[in-house]
Amino acid sequence: MKISEHLTLEELSFSEAAARLGLDNTPGPIVITNLGLVAAVMERVRTLLGGRPIVVHSGYRSAEVNRAVGGVVTSAHCFGLACDFVCPTFGTPAEVALAILKSDIEYDQLILEYGWVHVGLAQEGLLSRREALTKRSPGAAYVSGIRA
Ligand SMILES: [Zn+2]
Image (cartoon, rainbow, N blue to C red; front, side):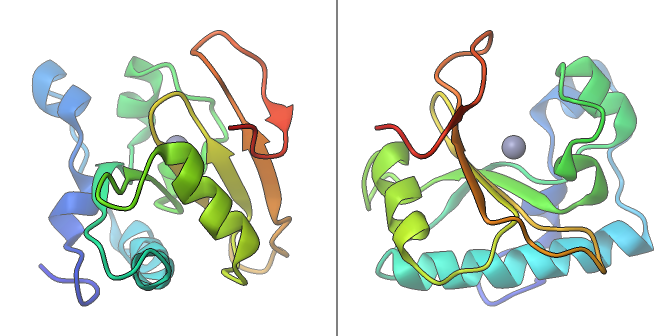
């Protein structure tokens, strides 16, 4: 099911871990609404990156799936408010994150992770912090800014 011009609900709720471990990762109505907001932001990202295809690594993660992948309990992914992605035809994750940082795209958190970019949106009614962070490895602490 398409939820924006270029993204489907399936792409934003697919979980490799869920498939592998047999966990349920079916989004409920609120999550589906939130994923629609994420998809709209990702369309803006796609346009910013010259209309190049976005490859989604992870969108929605149920609490069960998030636990299995070691995600933080308050992760925006659990609310369907985040997307981890790459855009290899545009550049490295660092180049993608820097382009978003310099744009006027509204996000709550922009994180350059080890191998992908995380864009998270604020919960309904909360202001976007427009916080940019870098995490260089699974065990590393988050550092402020996008550090290529
Ligand atoms: Zn993420």
